[in-house]
Image 1 (cartoon, helix red, strand yellow):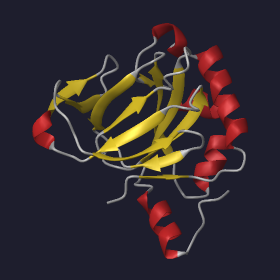
Image 2 (image 1 turned 180 degrees about the vertical axis):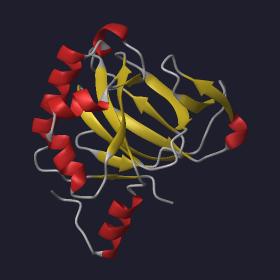
Image 3 (image 1 turned 90 degrees about the horizontal axis):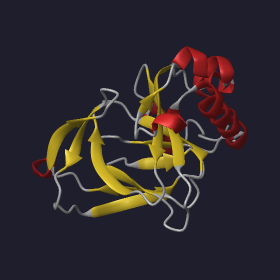
Length: 189
């Protein structure tokens, strides 16, 4: 079962800074402080055209982008996303030290949920525990399976908010991982 893999994109820090400038200057993400905020794809790609270059290499077109805002000291929010395809999550602001943790699926322990933006998910019912599967620190872009229960655990030593951006595509980017595993391609750009 595929859970996640870091993508080695050489200029990801430069792109992260461009996304940060876009978030700070062209959106109200930091004022609204919503856990999930859909972004205008055309506007984002106009400000950060490097994103198109990165994903065109894999023949992927971004059809969904959302900022994920986490308040300082946030821990958990375990959920299963509604997207059917693997997604990419990209570090933007204060992601170092935070962990995205994954847990063994047990659908009996979840209930349907939705965010203020209309994003659909399954949320862990309060008081339920899940078996831990693994975690990553968001220090570079990561391809991950949003159907595996996961939650964001902010750096407990940081009193700053954390922002990442997640991307959905016109087709499943799973082939990127499969090609890497078979040696036909390399995730490094």
